[in-house]
Image 1 (tube, rainbow, N blue to C red):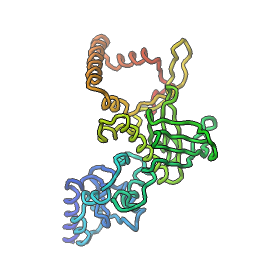
Image 2: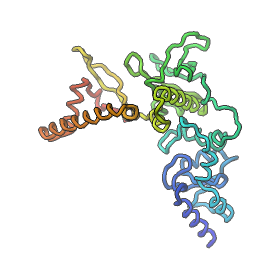
Image 3: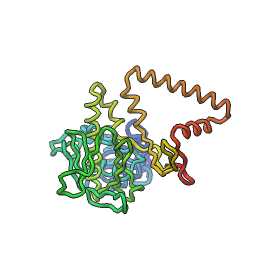
Image 4: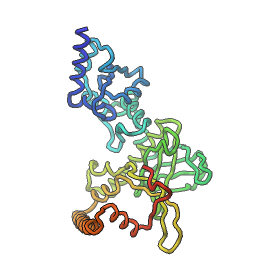
Length: 344
């Protein structure tokens, strides 16, 4: 009994050390599980994915399960930092590293890519599909009219920074050619009603368009997602050759801050029409990171002037929120659609 208590105490001490105090796969603090074959500490959710890799990874609770001396010694010799030096040695800059709030398919494929397929160890494996100049796949795409999902062929080219999709496999002309200039991709399993659902957003005729797609295999849809990120990064590198990858990577894709339907008027006196409103994370970051020093200074001056105007309005009305609401309404002509203005 004394040995059991001593081993559990040693594990709790190990998990508090820097590197071990966050999940090795999703980064959430205070993991309470461990893979005693890989020598890493993981959270409860990631441990469930590891259970599906029983030939590679075997997990135990560091609080509830029995640990013998040899396993504890193995955990002391390894740890998260040592494992990352092996399994994350050559992760491409564009490859998306999921966080604990991301959907299951992203975390599942990240863990499988690291430990099962060993894609980032630097070993001599064939080039991954998401690293090639051309990526082709057949996906299920949500139709515009009847909302049914139909098979469509997609072709991604890093040479001209475009994504094309075709209605038929033998079609010579694409239905749409999507540029990487104003582009975003994000997993939306709940909205698409599929665990592998991916939303692709882009600008067409100064309007935001959305494609909702999925693939039955998680590896295929996540490979497409990372191939899109690779192509988008290549585009940004060409457009901004003086910026480093660390500045460009946050601009590749982003999560949606707010999304929902609102009603808006046009430039003339017309009735309100229902339109989707999107707000993406990287928009302000991208403008700020790629702006010149003069543009940054001008932006700061505008922000300061805007803040002064907001302060005057607040002093008059006693409510900053009412000032902001009236200002937005005057500029855009938006109004909430139904009871709820935005679906968060």
